[in-house]
Image 1 (cartoon, helix red, strand yellow):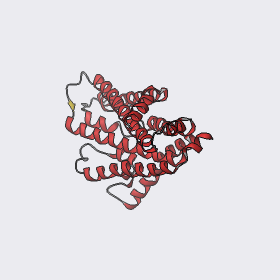
Image 2 (cartoon, rainbow, N blue to C red):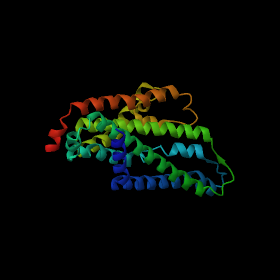
Image 3 (cartoon, one colour):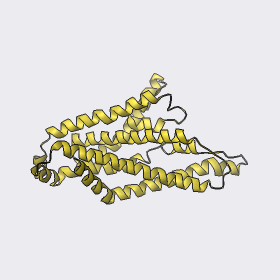
Image 4 (cartoon, helix red, strand yellow):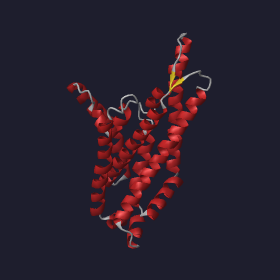
Length: 259
């Protein structure tokens, strides 16, 4: 399976779409940094108000919308479905490679690709905002809390990656998979937030949706919510992975290839 992982990760690294999604993510990170800098430094300065720059608040701001999710959703939707419509599965199965190795090799490679995607995006965001704040006398930050927060966010993205894998195994056709994932992003946000508001819940139902958990997580609170956060992330990693594998095992891959 290690060779499959290496091969799949090589495909990810050499993929033009992955590169373009990284560029798009970098553009979003630069835009968010500029927006945050303008709102927290430029505007108060113009109003003769002392500006306090906060790396903690900027870190949360990076996940305040779908900027990081959109490019990743596009790439993963295409990545998980491309082999259903190529001759790859038929060739590999004919060489005696097991379905288990094929499935988990691709899934683990997607996790590594997601890890690379998030780390590069984080580096771009922090390098840019710190370059804007280079003349600021004081920056509010808490390095251990920020690192822990980012690690949890990475786990959220791995859970989201696994969820897209499940959707891909269910529907297989790239156009359908991409449309469903993008519709879920908006529909579940509107639906779950309305339910939470109507029920007056302290812990929003939206936070049980892996994307909502990422968006709503707070640096100063995540330590106290850690059991709920870890349980939600674990559910989105192991349950979709198990269901995806069962679907993958039962699917007629060779028949799909002949189409």
